[in-house]
Length: 105
Image (cartoon, rainbow, N blue to C red; front, side, top):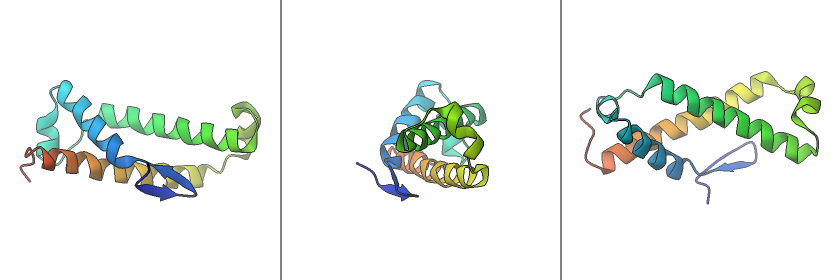
């Protein structure tokens, strides 16, 4: 089930945000979230995974391999799409913290 759609791709950012908040708590970094921040290293990893997943979906849709498709990749569109998805994931992480009663800001 997706709650966010961009460029014809449905993304379940709510579930992702809840799961990522759980992972942040496991790393004992929930205080960052409580004060409106997110762990930079963790979010960089999430961003890279989102980018990889989008490229995989794109190449599967085209029926080609990643190396075959890369010369035709629209870097700006990919960047904009990743940023939009990351924004929604961040909102859902903060929402999960709020639902848990852990937000200070």
